[in-house]
Image 1 (tube, rainbow, N blue to C red):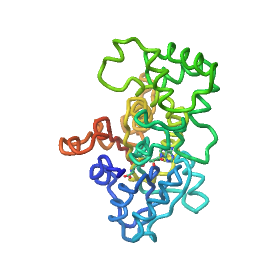
Image 2 (tube, rainbow, N blue to C red):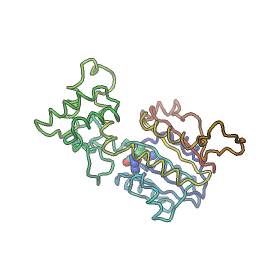
Image 3 (cartoon, rainbow, N blue to C red):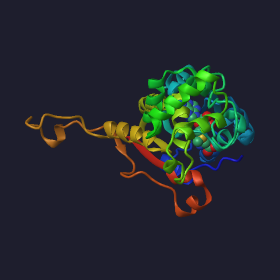
Image 4 (cartoon, rainbow, N blue to C red):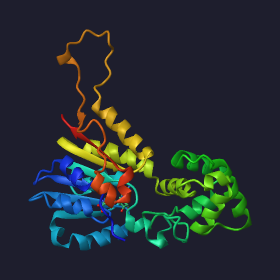
Length: 310
Ligand SMILES: C[S@@+](CC[C@H](N)C(=O)[O-])C[C@H]1O[C@@H](n2cnc3c(N)ncnc32)[C@H](O)[C@@H]1O
């Protein structure tokens, strides 16, 4: 399955690419954003991360004509500072993160990300990682399952779904996505099953986030990016759900707000310390009508961009 890059032009435009700059793509995927970014470079270079080895292998083919302008790194983007340091890079002109799974991952029946295909419970972006969805579903205690479904899926029926999972796995291990879908459905009231949208959507999202530790990676990845940016360097992040967007919004706000000063202190405006970053757009950028008509994934996408100003 082809991956249609979301908010492609908006991301590239807002990164304000310098042709001789050093850039990072934390989420290479199928190299849609990477290819567009590289096309703006002359002597510049792109360092591209993906924790999925397959994404890197397939992107090498997409980028075969510009391999001198890119370095591939098979790692979580939260490790970017250490990984780049080993290559002698301590600061960069821009970084982009296009979060979540790609269409080829989601639509690969064998990866177990989707409730639409029957597959072993896997959901690992990085297939060299030990923890998978099978282990969480079959070994985590009931309270941990409830926390995962509530916190990462905002699932209203978290408690009854976790009980149904524990009961089912006492009989025999829960091996596949379809078995899990049936268990989730069995724990929901009929009126919920009649609603639009797949009943297992929230739990599958929650498990995927837990397997890949996505929210910790995001927080650590933003902090690492902030430290790596040069003055006038920009960080652009595309999120796909409210949990991700809330993290980006909160951390961007922290860095773009002036440090707190006791209101009674007799300071002139010129003596007040300014924030080191500014938001490039006050509101997140969302997809155009045209893109929404062409790409279903774009519906929940939000792009936020921050710039280091000193
Ligand atoms: C939405 S896709 C990116 C698509 C890409 N921008 C394109 O245009 O083709 C997300 C990719 O990032 C990878 N990914 C997600 N979280 C990651 C993380 N924390 N570290 C490294 N790679 C990650 C996934 O494996 C997936 O290949």
